[in-house]
Length: 419
Image (cartoon, helix red, strand yellow):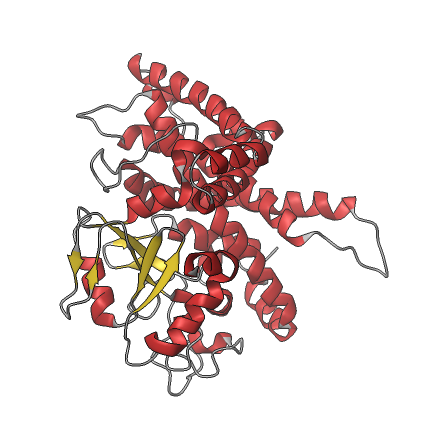
């Protein structure tokens, strides 16, 4: 019965549990979902032990496997439950190579963003001296094409059919995985296939990427290094395991998984940032002044914009939980809290971001709490950047395992906002 309640009111169930138990002295509490118990932890000690546990015991990959159902939603791609068994080249590819490439591709990204905005605005009729854009649909197009340019290179990112499929894929994976988790077995599989038209976007995206990866593998085999592109596909190929070489099928599966993770939440976060901007219009002029006259290189150092985006991430907190791990073996915290195999350990991220114990007036939008020119009394949070990670700021994860595309996400949102 508890699991069914979670299906329809998961965020409220977590919030009630936090207010009843978790908020008091950082005590853990339990949330029941269909077929699984989630152990919610809030204390620094529990989070520290959660982070220090080996991936062979508490696994993020197992959570992702359960969450996204890649065997069904990503054309049969099957992740291992434990991180690192088959190598983690994608971490270096995204965290290091993508981050270092962003300054090079920034002018092209700005052109993409302004081009889409201009095109979409021109489609709309002028009513009372202004035009109205469908916000989420427009943001998804911007994030989709911008990220495609970085990940897939110029050729594929200019192919409108490919762009449409790449965007539809992320939506189909989310929808299909939710159905499969709510209704496991043949019934869920049938409905998921029906709702995603037989996982059509996954099949077409796979075919596009397989041809491109095969072409590049053949190019590498010929020793034709001079022609190697500088994009996400190539970085993943170059950082894939050397001892047990991944074939084209394995590489494409990895690319599809990374692609979903890089676009889905970024589009939602960008949309909330724009909503917050127009909901708190007193920020528009100061932000406009900060951005005005800045070169592309200087867009990385805009403290008010960064503080605004960080406050937007805090207030929206559209994911109720974070730092999720699945127990691959029984796990016991130092205080005796026990977690059984298959259970998840999570941090109730949204509830903590909206707790007056951490923030003054937590439901009020106040970017100054993260802005270095002001001091917010009674707040444990020092002025810091959106991309920073700490015990208090868990948006990107914690400790050893942080979201590998966090810099890319932060930069792309920062480029969106000036436009």
